[in-house]
Image 1 (cartoon, rainbow, N blue to C red):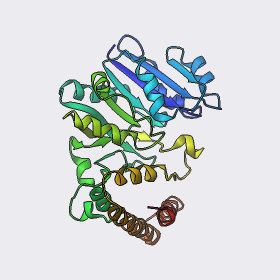
Image 2 (cartoon, rainbow, N blue to C red; image 1 turned 45 degrees about the horizontal axis):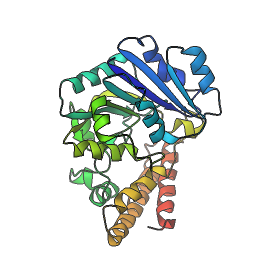
Image 3 (cartoon, rainbow, N blue to C red; image 1 turned 180 degrees about the vertical axis):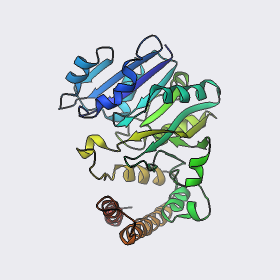
Image 4 (cartoon, rainbow, N blue to C red; image 1 turned 135 degrees about the horizontal axis):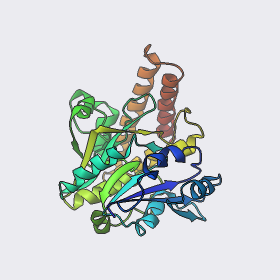
Amino acid sequence: MQLSVIIVTYNSAEIIDRCLAPFSDYIGEDLEVLVWDNASSDDTVDHIRSTYPNVKLFASKTNLGFSRGNDRAFVHCSGEFILLLNPDAFVEGIDQIWSMLRRLEGDDNIGSVGPQLINLDGTHQVGDAGWNHDLFNSVSHFLFLHKIFGLKSLFLSNRRFLSKPEVDVDWVCGACMLVPKRVVKEIGGFDFGIFLYGEDVEWGRRIKDLNKRVVYVPSISVLHLQGASQKGSEGAPYFSTKWLDALIVSVAGTTSRYGMIVFKVAALVGFMGRYLLLKCDPCRSKPAGQSKALNMFKYALYIWRGRI
């Protein structure tokens, strides 16, 4: 078996067909698809069981979260390589995955590969890859230093990187990540203390600790409906503070109390600056642009009210 695809679902009935369709005709000797369902309350399980009998389906009675769901599925994988794929991430065709796999096969020093994630409107989805979640990179991100001076940041958001064949980063998003099974065995599964958000960053750190490369391939683009299971509809604006909570925990573990004060000030200035820029930009379409501006304001309030 060459490739195992793991998809962890939760109330994903409306989107699961679009996720599974590119793989269903190729399941066989070289490809298997495993779905771990986290106690969905809709008909996700029944639909997969009746429509995709060649998919290995595991129906959990409790919601174990992203980390534990993937870890439970890892032990059932037969492939030399494992693709982690969110149910709201849609590849254009199986060739995209084979291209990523060939990049891994060609270099034993690579520990994981991830594609560029894009939004519904075709724009780059910031948060698909990046660097360590520490104080320096946080300040660089919030205060736009990565764009002004070309410094590293939390996320790969500088457009100059998107024109490169590949970029060495510290982590790639778990929404679509390809890893050799031998690397998974070496580093172990995801951190059980992380229920959702931040587990891919922590995993990337462990991959780098093995002196393996984490490679981002922007020429391969995958549509990702960020937070689709939580939003309720495809076009709804996405807002969640869970990623920010994970960032705060990560930074707090690498800096002092005074460092966290610097973090809070930088985050406040950064979110409010983004709010004002988006609010005053006449080119921003409504309501999408204004919804994004409102999200920035809500993030600023969250930071202000939080005990950091």
